[in-house]
Image 1 (tube, rainbow, N blue to C red):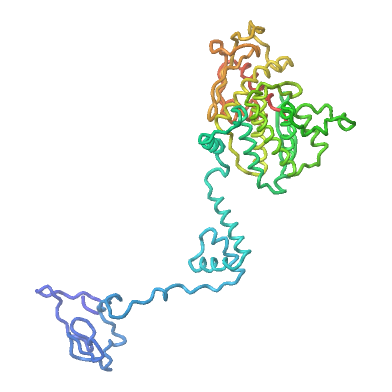
Image 2: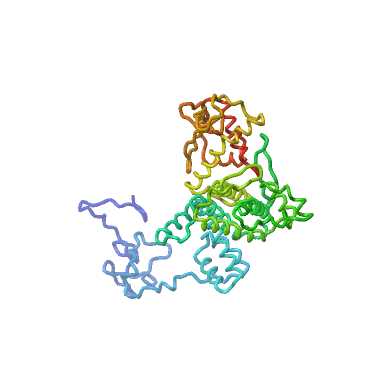
Length: 465
């Protein structure tokens, strides 16, 4: 083919067939001139107009190669001249870009303009900081709460290096840890959070119960019930003025148990309670931990009265730690904040307390006709083996317990095991707190169905307001 853009047939020497140069061009297709004079190595003529350029309507078939700017004699351009010109944007436009800037979605010029503006505008700087913090929360892959075991590990590390002169008894450590975690959760609450609605839930007479209150009302409830331990230790009772002598006190003489004390406090204090209740609650928990520490752990067997039953002090402290954790979760749920279970060894102690209380709770339900009759032959002999249910708690803080079914005085026996129930640790605690129905609690059930039902309902009956 021939023509401006065609291929030429090769000669026998492997080159292109010689073509008659067009006017103003050399034989190789190059321009007929290297400089102003128009004389090149491959041609001898000039363009008709003497400029040495191609004809306007006849472009070169093969353009000459362009030389790199680095190969020429001219200096390289200054890179600063290539930078984009700074944007001149109004305050409203810059403010509207803050969201995109926080998400790193602005162009280079917009980013520079926004950041330059933040250095001179305080209101936009505050807004930008809040937006950046919000973006950090959006990308947070894990719980915002600290590991529940972190405080325990830090304290253990410190105490290994410098043992305390007055250590906290091991049985009081869960209460110390759980109250500290709840106090940390409350630290940054504003007025809106303190008045957030909370529904207290428990299980009584084979039915779910609930009571509506606020975050501040929950702390008032904990203050009132923890006062039972304060009374046992000889400390000041936060309800002393309410339950004291006099006409007003006489009207509250029934306020002896946890529910009665709470109702009395709610009735006589400012309602709804405000954040002012946090101070007395914090001081009381510090006093309780400090007092049991000064006893050297010898007061663990001191009886704490709950009006209709008693617990040794070491079990009462575990009971209060358990309730503090459960109500902390109620508060966290009310303000939409994540909250983790206790450290595994503390959780194991709480589960162990509930497992040890199950035989008594089962016997009380049987006396009221709410459980199947006992079937053992040695109901009155303490320590004798009897029919048992194996309670397997899975997960962190779990274990296995043999629950005697026919008498609180009996001893659990693997040889007389008639049923086996497996539950997750958190699920069992929610059951014991009255937060889930017994029928929905067991993950696995094998054996005597009546025994399984009796134990699950007994676990739920451990709950109270």
